[in-house]
Length: 313
Image 1 (cartoon, helix red, strand yellow):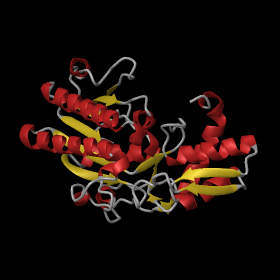
Image 2 (spheres, rainbow, N blue to C red):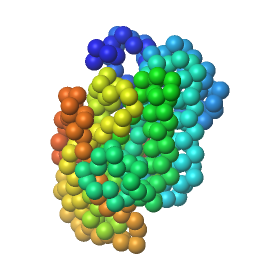
Image 3 (cartoon, rainbow, N blue to C red):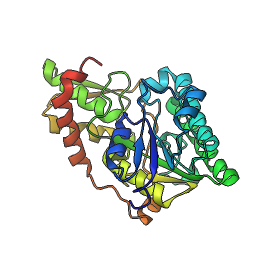
Image 4 (cartoon, helix red, strand yellow):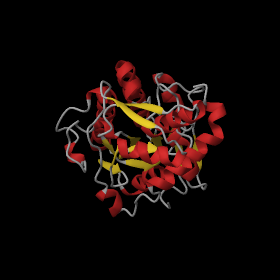
């Protein structure tokens, strides 16, 4: 981490799920700054310009409007607009303030719906993303192109990281906006609490996902910042995929749920398969460390310790 040890660093989304982990992983030798959304609205161009005007060496742009299939399906315009505008404001403000290096965290949702796993960066613009989250994925992909263009035209060091599905303690367990792992954990926990013998899940259960523990993702982003500075998309993933149906059985077993698991096939599966090729990141010495079972147990334990404060959302 020598590259970052004496840098002045700004982190957008510093209080988010990934942002809090990245913040803790950053070296303590330099200046590290970030503002919560309550104090800085990145949709405001002037506010973003002012926030980034303090001679930072590197900006990590993690702030994003995120959610699961249901949230993306319900608010596609919001997901496109907020992610696009925040990114535009951050990258342009960095240029105007002469910030030498910007790190952008993209999304695996940018890959085409029928991309063949393991996904490789050259596939990004070979087809249309999964329709349920295409606006979000396209906005993030466009920002990746913007960052590459700024590297070519203005000489800005550019790091563009694409993590696959993140999970871990502190994830969003909101009933309307959570991703698959926290949603499953909450559903099984509520079934146990209510003594229900049936849990109904969206889709067919046959879609696959590549899950990456959030701390592994934070380490990968820092590694990429040091070694990948030309805007080339860099995947971060576990290198394996699991069917949602198999994941559900695994989580149910860990939590002690013994009832039926049914699927509502009238609801969308999302992208049929998802696994990324992380060959480039491995060349820089990064690989995921937390195995899925270990990560799931940690996440379940966190939820059970914090569900009283999260149950209202």
